[in-house]
Image: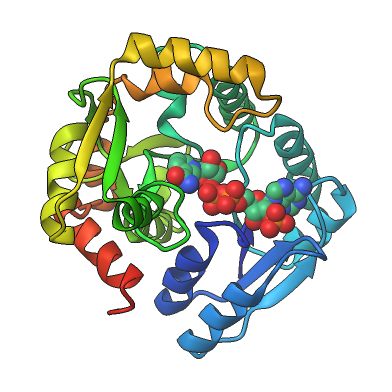
Length: 296
Ligand SMILES: NC(=O)c1ccc[n+]([C@@H]2O[C@H](COP(=O)([O-])OP(=O)(O)OC[C@H]3O[C@@H](n4cnc5c(N)ncnc54)[C@H](OP(=O)(O)O)[C@@H]3O)[C@@H](O)[C@H]2O)c1
């Protein structure tokens, strides 16, 4: 039995689906007020039953009780929350569980310093110093379902408004990973001893310039849209004024800064150890557009 923690998030249902299809028995630790509809629908369409343990990472007892029924655990709660991870690691050590897969992020590799990056790095250090047989997967930006905050939002925006705004010249490199490739990676590492004690970057097949990515979106959407470019310096200034005026800004100068950075990562180690063979962006975005148009 595998325990999923963080199953009610964006990544949860596709990961659950893949593991159920592979034949694993699954349980999920969820908070009492979390919406479990997507998980129940996923289990139903796979023709399988799943077990729920109600609890929170703030309570050691509920973590231990969920872990006692499991042989291994997949931890998908953001490692930015180092306090929750500490609770988990302490409970894991008391429960005696050995095998755990953690989902981190390539954010830890970005050259610029940020609070989130430092917290994730700190969490990775705690995992590495634990007694668990751990594997850490670091995905790049994940896309490929109607719930993603990245490309599905972008496509909806373009369809509605007929234009898209970019900050900078669009020459920065990106390498987003399709959600099913993340689910597949988790399924491939869970029982793979070669991956114990290791950290892997997982990314889309190719790195591409942001503006080339927009060309691909345009071709696949079969819709012309205008691209409005704001120079980075000007955008930083504008967003810092906005951030000062707004109490709770939806965009910060730091985010603008990071938009101009190349985010491209080697995944050869993952290809060697568990045969990661990710989808190209062309194929991934085509599948997402079909899903959003209800054609899947
Ligand atoms: N999304 C991306 O593009 C992306 C890219 C790279 C890496 N990642 C990493 O992938 C992992 C999963 O991401 P995601 O986008 O699926 O995350 P998400 O949608 O934010 O989901 C977070 C999950 O954590 C659970 N959670 C939060 N606090 C909890 C607590 N105290 N006790 C128990 N559960 C708690 C949430 O449960 P509730 O439903 O109860 O809130 C939810 O199931 C994260 O580590 C993230 O950093 C994501």
